[in-house]
Length: 236
Length: 329
Image (cartoon, rainbow over all chains, first blue to last red; front, side, top):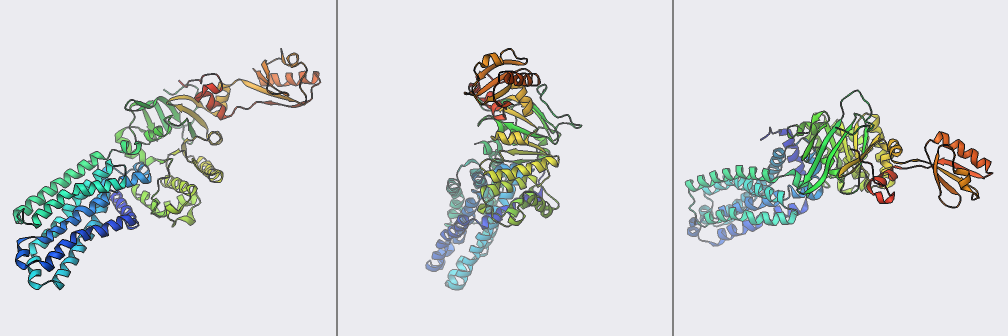
């Protein structure tokens, strides 16, 4: 891997964030998708008995946000540039493939984490303030909240590499986003199995899943980089 | 080796671009092959050819975006090799045919992004200079998506000028522009020439190439010809004199046949005669004297012009002139 210039990575991150802020369809996706993952924990909080709530890990269900939202953003990363015709001018600069992809990944990670943490905090606050106190106690357990804090960036990063890899092969933004959501569902499925206690939620499971995600993220960067073939991207 | 007698301007320094037997294939398809030429520092070099001739692929190859499949080249003093990609890209700039601007960003934001990618120390100053060079200082805060095509092309040119490149590759810089916008780009290229920037220009506009370029090369997968436009005219076309009289000559054969320097003649309309000559300085006075002796009312005697378009058509579409083009190699 060539030496990474932080200044160039910063330039990519800054540009990407500016573009995201002004991309209405992307903002709409980042707003609507989290709502899907908020409904179930809230329904559970206000309808299930405290005993039932203790049997599951419903807040883990909200890891669906960092699983899906970043894919929608990252899927835009390469194919969006191709459709705008901006990829070729960028590739004529000294920026390296790794710098470009890292910048795009970090730019997708930042808003994804902000959205995931903000929505999670909001849900926790609503449950704490308005749910039955015993239900709130049963639902808002320290380890579950810690798991959300730790796993959000790991899941988001993995989804971002999936999104970038798909974006590097796709020829249309919508198709890339749809395929990206589809491919990110297994991550959400694992979170769902933990939420339903099918996969036991304990320290060992958390450690194994975290290690697996770290490995997948390293692999994801390498796979995305190998799929990012400038020659193919500017000639097809 | 480059073709002999290709008219490379003799300069003190090594070439800005030197290409030797370069080729690029995409699978079974050949984009270009066995291309050799040199571009001198400060030269404006025109690269012409029909659609699909390999011009854009050549620019992308020299710009390190595509890897050549044969031959070698040096660009801005560096060998065209994967290890030199970043160093070459620091010394050159490419303006692609499509402006390729981020339409949701302003003009200044677009340029700031590229200044960041080049790790410039004084981005604001460089952006200001580049915008001033294309007369867009007052549009710095406009969104690129709101600009006309001509203005976007100027922003794209400003982006290429940000780095003050040693070699500037311009791929169809006036494609799709109206005459006024194209004229502005021409003016800018003239100023770049005055500043000593080496410009590698691909274009379909032959009058543009004729006006702007020191030399031109015509590519159609292989390099067909290279040289100064006037040299190419001399090499490819016989010199001709066009005689126009007020009335048709009674016996033109008697007037034109056997004159010194005149090879053949033919009618080009009722009062027009096209004479193929070996030496204009010999033929023109002799023709004038013969016409006066024949009491012809002469309206004009002039050298028939051959434009770059004639050269281009002669080489690219031999059916238009009935002869095949001269190969550069």
